Length: 78
Image 1 (tube, rainbow, N blue to C red):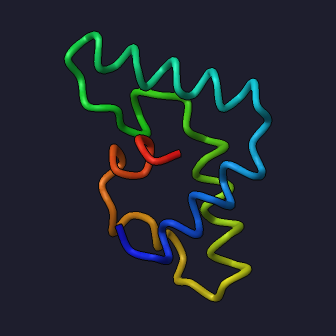
Image 2 (image 1 turned 30 degrees about the vertical axis):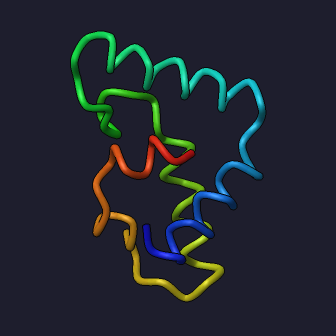
């Protein structure tokens, strides 16, 4: 995992409420139980996307910079 993504995911975890993180993890686990790869469309990842955007703005990254990574790589590392 690239260092920039690792820093961004640290930021996301710090900014998200503990309950929201628990819900996100439960949705990701549900995907796997259904033999699905978790994606931003299968789980409620709006807050994650918003926080990745904020991180990108604060660190002069291009718009939607996280799209260079697979959704499941991002979601599994939150």
